[in-house]
Length: 321
Image 1 (cartoon, rainbow, N blue to C red):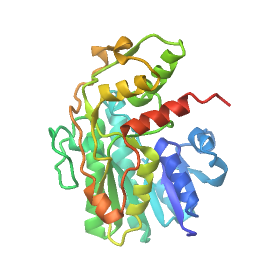
Image 2: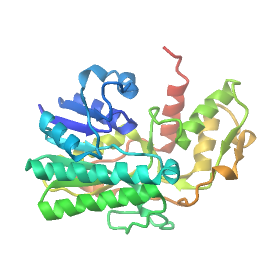
Image 3: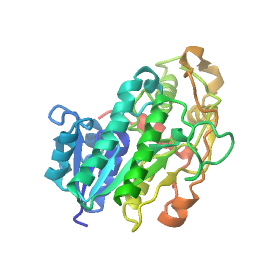
Image 4: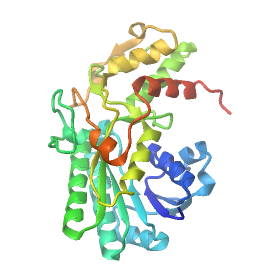
């Protein structure tokens, strides 16, 4: 394709998988970090693509830094996957969360507008923006009712993107992604915490798994599937926002049960609910209707929750190199 893409947040789960996907399509891939000279980029190394990517330092909360990097790389596509990514951590660091997500997104949009280029811009929104909508399956038209500092920041960034698209005719869109996991998930995420604990218990290295609210219901998908949808959004002739999900939701207790059964264990013998791990506010149910992505992008999730669990456990049990 000989296209050039800039991925902000390339060191994270989605950034690494997106870089691999774009490289496979023939893209020149550039990535940024707050300090590229000392960043480990361990996920890119794990995927075997570290040496195939160009890097530079960029502070998303500094407009001059953002503009300088855009002028240096001159990308045709920019993917904004940066910013604080943990809902739980956002309650402890609300200011940093809001600044990294909202200010960072605004600086990218303004830099693209200022440069008067034809850059296509993808923004990572989140299903957390919807908040508690009961058993309704969220679509692109479902109103936002965010219930965490992270969700509030993501909702604000989403509307910034919509505003710049309408006011300045930028090709800017948001992917409203529901939960998606992989072996690259950091250990602070509950899914990775579960996978690590199950493997440790099965090998006799641990005895109990302490968790918060296990009755929550989520739509869990496979991260490598979801980055393909990000790319497809920027290949359309008209920029639009899309819900990206499997369309199937399960309780966290079902996720736990699936993981323990994979290794022949009864989860109820090992899991203890710890009230101190509950969040100040949380979503009881999260369901999605990804029909628009299917009809307009030709995208469907290839993996469901049980396959995600299997793949994560298989990777976790591989012998260390």
